[in-house]
Length: 500
Ligand code: ZN
Image (cartoon, rainbow, N blue to C red; front, top):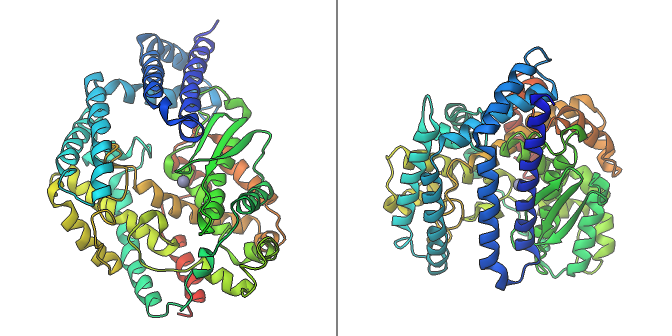
């Protein structure tokens, strides 16, 4: 057997272990009784330890070396060559972090999440502050262990967005910020009296669920290779290219979580179902980066699901399901309600225009924390100052401010920017897609999504993580990150809705 074949077998077993972890993680958040928590934590830790040990072993390194030699003459873009180069990158990253540091981070975040949960419930920053200081210190150690050329944040960002640099993200965010702040200000003088009140009426939960499923079947989500279940926090996970799990939540008094949440997770799911079957049981069967993954969820949730053509097709259907709740609505009034812009405190509830500002705020603060310019104790004050600068509002409580997200207590520093990168990338792709499919709006108006999904499959999905996000952007758009399509989209769409 050649070294490449041996490597493939070894990696397939590692991928199997990884998917076994995903299955028990999915079960934990969907069907596991609360009593199962302690045992599940042990099971999860055991599987992850086994996966990590097997992957970082000398034997994996030896097979990678030999396989690199074996594939040296092949097409550099072939599955085989990419499997070796991408896995080599993962392997070196995983080996750079001392196991004591991994264990210390796990311990510190385990405690911090508990303290954060309490602190948020009581809306009191003080008890959480020393835990954040500890996490920042450990993340700084992690950045040093991983190594970086320019800024320590590069190393942390690279875990979620391989090969993307802080300087590039900063340049793009800085370019966007003044325009979006100006747009929010202009909109705030024009706010419609109704806002999104219609979305907060009473809607039968099962009917909401069925409507969402009907939409994502039309999007092309394959229920023979996936399913949808309920969870408290919606997420998407996969156990195989042919077994992709979506989760969603349903609120009887708010239409958006189930409707737009389902479309969002479906976008992630379509990406996972779209990897080439040749990548099954390899380390390449995953998204190129979190930002690229998020570009897919945002595309199907916002660019399609909050568009006028989409609602031309689906509003009469929704009205038929909820005739009493929507009797006083027109296509136009409902479309405006679904696109209400209003500065708010909570990121996950933010609209398309203000959402990016929530992310840019966290990106700036994370860099200041990691580089030591901002102390954990001063975070609430800094947070409020930035909220005032970006959105013109000040959170009345820490729970509605710096304590709202779980990420920092989980040690996820460098993760937030990927949400906004997803928005930016989705619009760069959208420009290309509309050039390739000139009557796309017309197709969407007729509930047809086949050509759109096919374009994404061919240009993006099939590759999995054979290419990095910057490489894919280069292949598809001929350039790097570009904020122009995003700004043009926001200004055009919301300028029209708000008559600016
Ligand atoms: Zn997402």
